[in-house]
Image 1 (cartoon, one colour):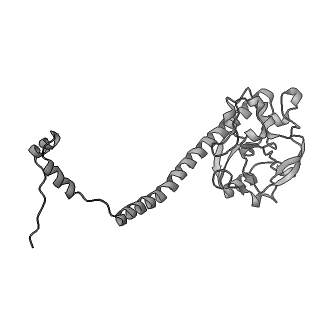
Image 2: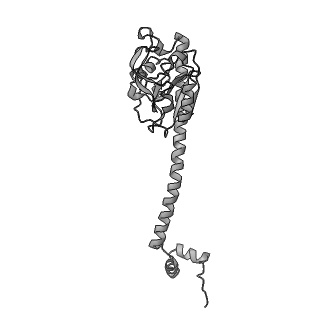
Image 3: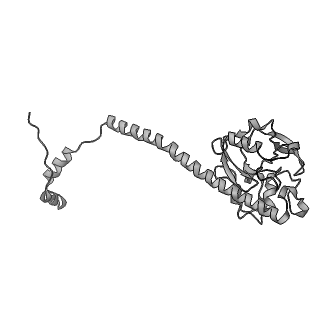
Length: 248
């Protein structure tokens, strides 16, 4: 059997095609083309779908990693604002009465951020990029629904390892507790040594992980085991080891 090969048009043939001539060559070239069969098309679509299925989770993970990094940055700036407030007033907002510019006795976490309006550069810092909570333009108008972070109302200046702020999707604590430090009652969430083994993160943000900020100004990405270690090593008073927080 003799195999024939279709010749490639030379330069002169292509010129005739461009100038409107060579209809016979054009016809032969057209007949020589080959379209996809239905089977080949379906196989191509399946391959593309498999590749997309492999790539999309990786892209989603990369985006979430970037959002968590931004959340850490937010928490560091929030903690810096808290420290600057304490430098000026010698206590944190939740230790200072409202008549003196603080948030003591106020039962909403947002109030502690409101009184720091001179120290927070923008209310956008109060919303984690992975959270769906509504952003607002003015810090003085901030409500709990505009805040992604809890306030560590047990924290005092001499406790560098205690939780001072963190993602609101923390779970496992005992609700409706009293916190004499902040003078709030029946609203705090408690993490004593009884509750700490159950401490963790819900799936609301960061895929069951979370971010916390400590009294020393540092911020950390932690899973449930690291969160429990931080709570156990917080340095809260031995006589009242509660690690009280106020959730937004």
